[in-house]
Image (tube, rainbow over all chains, first blue to last red; front, side):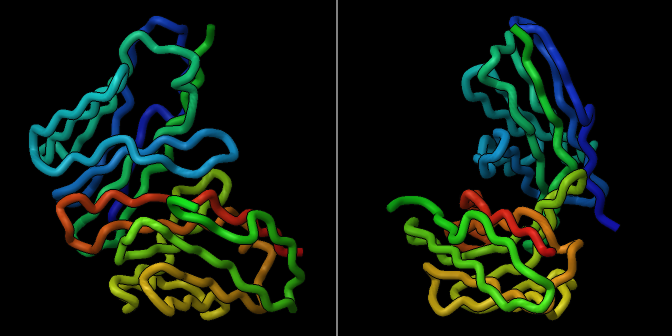
Length: 110
Length: 115
């Protein structure tokens, strides 16, 4: 069974701190996606990682992909309150059966 | 309107009712998806359509019936649902399956409550 696991599930951090969210998946996948969901809102695409070693950055967020380790990371630099949300990773194992992780609920404290 | 829209935003129905959820995308995409988001569970893919053809039915019970009349519209017909079907139903679209930029754009969702 294909699994996508994120950790931590909950993260409370102080503004200005750095932290990393991890996404592990159990089968080969050429694509990995990161999404953000604010409370009561829909999912917003953050990054699409298409190859091993891919790294993408947008503002205080940076995502990377290691297909050999089946691991993606979402690194948060100098967190601010506006980054509070739930972050999801998702993989496409090549069959368009997109599998989402359980999500990481991030709360940035002022 | 732009992006992906869904109606209604909230729906309460009894187990014997029949209702439909509607999704419309204004992005010129050719792939559309239905997802179910339940509390404390990962987002679950239900159906996938590519150029109006259904390519994926992820073992969804027959009380959920999708319809895709064209690449811009997607419906989810509901009948004789169970209370455990209460969830947020999200529609998404993407350029086309297999494209190199196959990011999905999500609608705001329909919050469904089955009594």
